[in-house]
Length: 99
Image 1 (cartoon, rainbow, N blue to C red):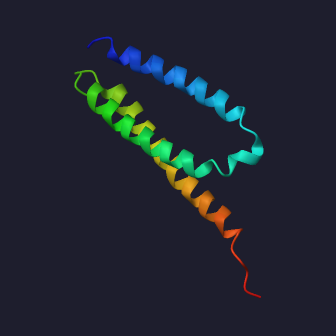
Image 2: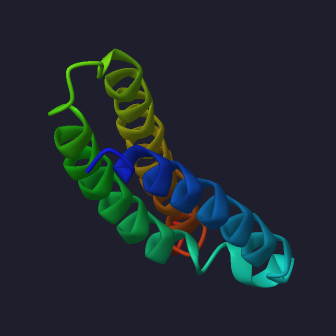
C-alpha cells in the first residue's frame, strides 16, 4: 500500500501524455462534435479523482495528496461546465432564426 501514490502519479503522467497526443492528432473539424463526448469523460475523471483522493487520504501524510485531488476535481469540473457552455453555444448556431 505504500507504493500506491507512486503508481497513481505514474499513471497520471502517462495518461496526461497520451491524452495530449490524442487531442493533437484529431483534425480541427472533429473537435466540435467530440465536445459532448469529452464532457462525459470529464465526469468520469471527477469520479476517479474523488476515489483516488479518498484512497490516498488514508495515509497520515496526506495533505499534498488532498491538495492534488482537490485540484483534479476542480479542473475537471471547470472542464465539464465549460464544455457544456461551448456545446450549447455551438448548438444555438444551428437553430433556425425567426426573421
